[in-house]
Amino acid sequence: MDFLLSRYRNLTALLLVILAQLVLLACQVKSNQDVRLIRVWAVTAVTPMARMLEFVRENTVGVAENYFVLVNTRSDNERLKGDLGRLKIENQFLKTELETADRVRALAAFQQRTPSRTLAARIIGTGTGANSRVVFIDRGSAAGVMRGMAVITPDGIVGKVLAAYPTASQVLLVTDQTFAAGVISGKNRIHGTLKGIGQNKVIVDYVQNEEKVEPGEMFYTSGDDRIFPKGMPAGKVSVVRQGRTFREIFLVPVGFQQGLEEVLVVTGGVNSEIPDQATATANPAMYMTPQAEPPKPGPAGPSGSTGPSGVTGVVNTDPTAISNLTTDADRLRQKYKTMGEQQGVKYGEGGKIPNFNADLPSAVKPPPQQAKPPVVQAKPPVQTPPPVPVPEPVKPEPVKPEPQP
Amino acid sequence: MSEYTSDSMLIDSASVARRRAKKGLRPVWMLLVPLVAILFQVYVPRFVQFLGFLELPLLVTVYYGLMNRSPIPGLLYGCAIGLTQDSLAGAGSQHPLGMFGIVKTLVGYFAASVSLRFDVTNPLLQFVLAFFFFFFHQFFFWMMSRALLSQQVDFNVPQTMVFGLLNAVVAVPLFVLLDKLKE
Image 1 (cartoon, each protein chain N blue to C red):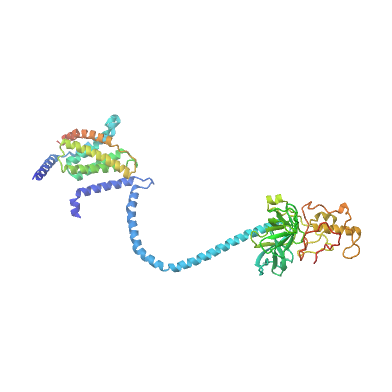
Image 2 (image 1 turned 90 degrees about the vertical axis):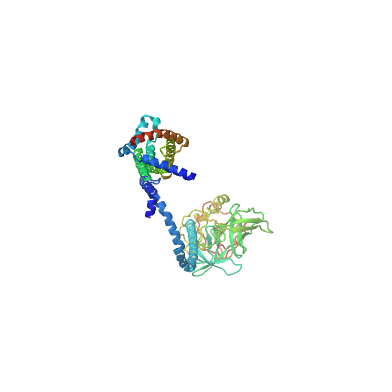
């Protein structure tokens, strides 16, 4: 060392002086980041060595460490896979719950908006028959569900209660072959009977070939069957063609196009106005009328009965209630009743037959169809759906308007 | 044989020059001469602007290195002159202490190293060395400005060469004048 210093004394002195001045320089100057140059130099000089040391350490000690870490990797991997699967299932469950909450919220909103009294229920099972279109809901007779009650969704009709058990009910869907309901077209007011055919579509029967029905037209419940409140969407016409006797009209049921998980059981139906085609096309969601005022509790008529939820299910005999008659059956019944009262004939006792062709007094003539928004209470559910098309003209025969119990 | 002859002549001339240079500057002049040179560089260009090209502190450093023929005193002398020049050049990070110091340290060292090998009393050699060290000084200063201070300084080579020539022209009579101070 001494030899080197003595041999290169001049050079050593030069380097020392230069180095001293560089340090002096570095202590004064700041870099662009306002850091003193000496710090920059120090870091720049030290970090490569630190990086090199870290590289050496990583490739020696690190390899050994990694080996021991990898021993547990397999078990960790399996555990993490399990966790991932569990989280996926949990995520899916939460998504489903969220969607269910959205549907329930929509259902609750509809339930508040509709004038009919409804009971929310959930589909819990399906029927076992190969061709049957039957589902079970989680509300039964204990909750007030009775046989024959309508089952709907905010989109339209779904079916009717086939049987009510204490804790569950069986619902016959509109697509079942044995299902039937009275319907009316939205544009031309064509009456017909909606029937299931065991497939995803339904048909409207008993519509004359001369009647005009167009594809895309909506059919609504007519209320003639005393099951479904009038004005509920039933289906949209997909195919129309000439038949041998009647038109063949195929509908796509709109009640469960969005899936069928939550439904509403109509415990007290209120008939609504059937929207015209323009309104229905412009805003399909506005098919229900606004909330009707609650009907006044009046005395039950002779043929009336109180529904399962206490709803008075008769036509009011009060003359002021004539304007509340909304269905053809109601009007016909009222007409015959008035004729019988005028001619002193009591129905059901036999004997004299009233003259059904006699003119009615103008004061008691039934009003034109749907002059006002309907506020009539729904009839109690009928056990068996009657044939819906109302015959016109009316034959002069005694009829028994009371529904069969 | 011829190599031996030329080497022996070179050594002889260097030894003669060393003997001549044994008479160094007196300590007073060693202090006064660089001080005057620096003051000249500081004050004279304010009044006579075209004399701004003169780098008298550098020429004094070169002279001292050449005449002293010892690298360590040469580099220390250059370091002292350079630091003094730095202290008068400005403040702050634009011209920190040490820039001229480092450059003139190198100039003093290399000038003294050259004088060990050549007869630097030759005016022509003095002219060439003055030109070379001026160019070296300017180039090294520019390089350090860019490398250490990140300053965007232009380096005009033709102008630097012209100024080098002018300084070399001034250096020859200046060295003669400084030689007179030794007597």
